[in-house]
Image 1 (cartoon, rainbow, N blue to C red):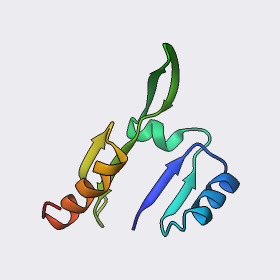
Image 2: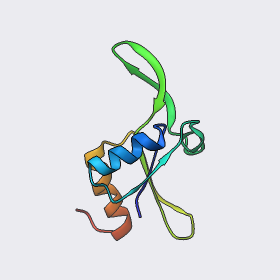
Image 3: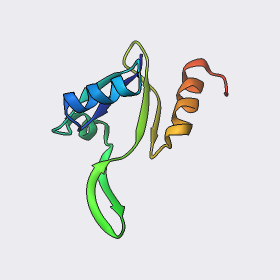
Image 4: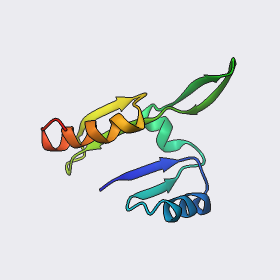
Length: 92
């Protein structure tokens, strides 16, 4: 099961999920509690400006709640391949 967390509103996430036909669950986390718990909210910089934001990351968690793979600052294209590899043990 794939679960995403975002500070966006439930409506915005629902619209995004429908628009992109995503089968995954998207959790609205406007207070950043989940991001803070996983250590993926931090300082980012764009155009010389610093701000707090979500650091693109993924965590593969098994049925027992153990983290099998954690990637911080992972690219979206690499994230899927690395997550599948963590689950299957095979490079794709």
